[in-house]
Image 1 (tube, rainbow, N blue to C red):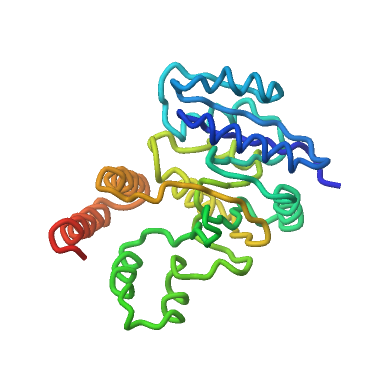
Image 2: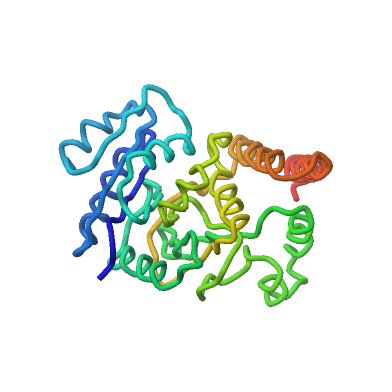
Length: 277
């Protein structure tokens, strides 16, 4: 018998239709688990609160009067969370049966695992890569080099998680924030999410700090969910990611390494925009 409640925290911003489908899948696959579901809304203008209250009155709804960002909203949910475990879940996800139970059982059996991510599937049924290496300079350069087809997939899989098939339980550097299940006491001990991150990078930072405390980050492929995500990578979105990564470097690495990272990313943007690489 699984001990304690699972608290699910969903940060919402103008995603009502996706959110309602996500909530339906949560309660449809709840089985015998006791769940506390918290929605933190960042001042949506699409009547999210009214619709959630009508269809899912059991959901605890926190309403912000402005968009405070993902990290701060997660921490707001964490402050009122009552479960032994907590799941941070994106609203653009659909939960499949037994996902919660499988993940919770793994965490209960492996006391050295601090945080777990599951397999993500795209809307067309294809795999969505959801774990990656920390963005160390040497990894970024290596990733830039081996992306050409002259390198066999076995070499790519060995050195870079982005090319890995996501088919085995594996300790990884970090997992995507669309689905992150963790021990709630552990997250409270480290202060939750770093609110220096507004959007993007907060999952990377959280996993880095957990590893720094000696905890393992686990990719668990035996549970999978549907994640719609955003397939578009325009320059505005890339700029947000770049700013998040720059914040990550500024928080955790020396000024020299931060400058090297900035130079690498400037070169990346130059190649993308002016050379078509």
